[in-house]
Length: 412
Image 1 (spheres, rainbow, N blue to C red):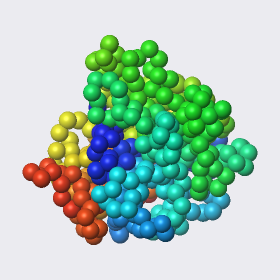
Image 2 (cartoon, helix red, strand yellow; image 1 turned 90 degrees about the vertical axis):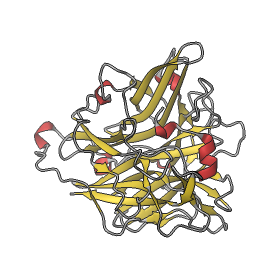
Image 3 (cartoon, one colour; image 1 turned 180 degrees about the vertical axis):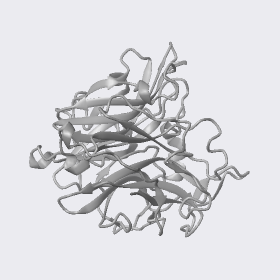
Image 4 (cartoon, rainbow, N blue to C red; image 1 turned 45 degrees about the vertical axis):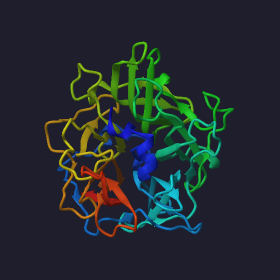
């Protein structure tokens, strides 16, 4: 099972959200694709370089309620043309102390330069207080898109992962994830889709594993990434399915794709997307945690995703949902993708880089401003660690002082 789909128990101890995710950079304010003749030649593509000054945010910040955020995960980055600011969303666990279980929520922060981020005191979305809700325990992996064609109350759409129990098959140590949706007029605070409007009759719930894999014994969808383009919402997501009486046989694992006209009712186009598998004949060989944008200037789609093999993260001291780095894929239609998993990743963990000395948390997100690309990702760091904070590691005691850190890289 992929790291992003792991363990409620580990979340309670570490305060980290399990997801990734990801974010929707909504190219050129989500403008429609230009005519083919207007497409600019691609030219030389630069590499991602870590920006000086990392890390940009550290877990441990205390808010006006006297409580602190224990973690940072699943960053989502987009540039807002109307305000000329970067909009950052991420998941966290909010508690009185690091040892407390905490409540999962999604934060919103802004920046003029994708360097210094100001975090809003009020959360953008909080795990449901209803103990019977499908997203009562997990509310994470946000991705936000802006729709200029929607009515004022629905201009911003957030999709997110949620869960309230462990996956009920196979003894799997991961949550029974599904995908939810919430709307906002200002992009600051979001309200879940009402149960009356949900295709599953529950507040927020819009896509389940059964929707992606009808007929499977059990299935999960998580880590959503959304882009609005020319009247259509496009959704990419991590997915897993299994079959057999006890779900003992893996059926599929990889990134799925769905579309919608309203952000609520989704038609699954392909799960998993075959062209994103590391071995096209093996439906279990996919990756996850997609980050997607549409490059209107060059009329192409770009995706960043994780696809680690066994042992790829073994050298990292931290031991919690690690990733070795992120791969890059491109597409001319958003359906068929091209990537070379034998080439260099767009970002690879480095033990010498500030903000990631102990490793990388799975998932990264890329936003765009013109032709520039900015990547936000989370590292495990051993510098400026708040009192009593720790990360899991490979040591005999199983943990060491450490903190979740938000880092930035850029590609020109």
